[in-house]
Figure 1 (cartoon, rainbow, N blue to C red):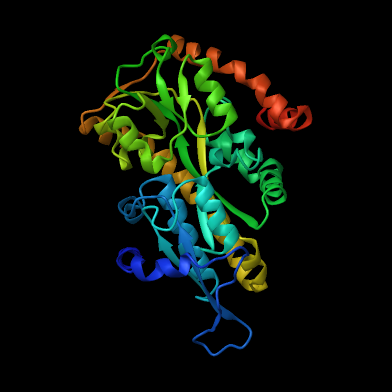
Figure 2 (figure 1 turned 180 degrees about the horizontal axis):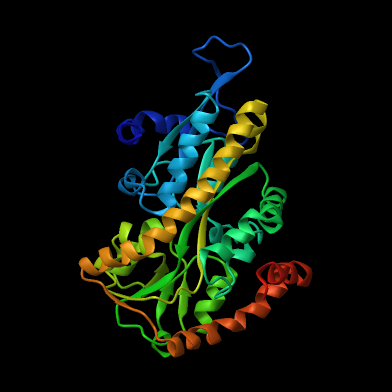
Length: 355
């Protein structure tokens, strides 16, 4: 897999014209007969657009990388090689929410992923995952993703966004604040120019803490921090490390204010064209990727904190009292979450979590 990703990077110039000819309607990749000579199963090659760095994917340490690579490996193995995934890392095929969604809808590429928080301008399907300080551990999150609510979120996204087939939840981790100055209490957030995802609940949480919020694509975030266009950002520790934000934001506060999942999705017409066996392979890959990413994300938190500190980042863990200050400020967003989701949906979420 390592050699394959590198080869794809080198042949990107050849592949890009294919990605650019999607037109205005979904297109299905031309199938070829399998090497076994079967007349029932056709081999399909699916191009997967990823914003993740090639180096992170190769290492497979992060929840994101472990989940994505497990998904690819499982799809290919369970389909008996009749589905092949060509992975384009480093935002080679698309960068930014609109470009990725449009690329899938037009058939410029067949598979992609980005964080659930970035779907907000298209659907509120993932509002359950964006309520600040709702989840305290990965098991709570997994309970939601594996249950009826997790499926309902997928169903709503499919209804709200045409041409999209929702597939797998992949855990990235809990989000923490990095800044150009030390952050220890919620009072230190006052007046901070911070980047967060373009999601109403995540924006409201940062504003409730006293920040001025802006949205910047993650591919442009390092530059925005470097040029002082913004003072701060918030991400899981693995994302902070892999994007080298420690070079331009030397301070981190372990606020753990929100959980982040990325989400794999596919061109609906392409998915519908697959055989039942191929669809079953994707179902197995979805389950395997979700489980692998949870395990990796949990293990990665302590490791990436050590790695960030080795790079010179100062990481502060708030006391229980200081953390309560962050939680109290952000709790004002819970009523907004109920309004956004509706009382029935909100109550079901709280009941599932025993809140």
